Image (cartoon, rainbow, N blue to C red; front, top):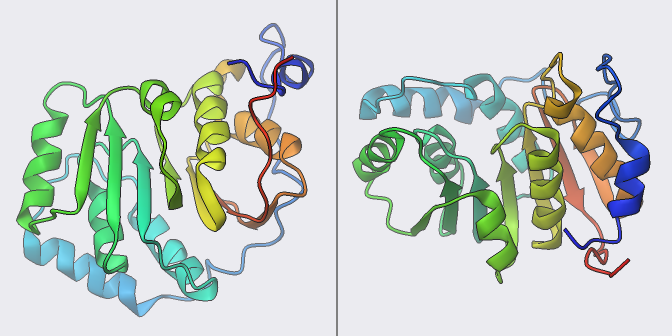
Length: 233
């Protein structure tokens, strides 16, 4: 990564340090979105049951209520969505339910037979406005030319994986676009697998260019201005 942030990252992160409980980033205020039950979530869960999707793993049901509240409070209505890490397609189907008339790009390495499960699920709702990229997020992002209105980052959870995905994703996010960062609440013994630490360092570097709107099981920010990420050292 030939980014101007490289020197700053070296100061922020030291692999030889022991992992401590990483604090919540100071830019996040008390969440306003967890308390109220969104009626759309009840309907969505009924929709999932009725359509008989097959999910071996479901990590985001609780998060969908908060996301729906965020979408409504901030008038989120994306035309282009990028998902980094989709597994069996629960989040893809959720976005399909939450929004109308949009296009999705999904990126995943699809370990084992996960792609078959993903395609079987999205085919139930005949989802056509989607491009599937079976590759690493690194390979996709360094070659990407598109801009997005919503990006959901749920790929590799190593520190370097997360911070790479976040910097590139922020670069490809439109102004007032929404960046969702999954598993912000993860607590790992090894510092090199800290999603929260990577996210906090990312937010330190892009200060004054975003609005922090939620933290919990996932973090959410809205992009307010562009920053240059590819200056040579």
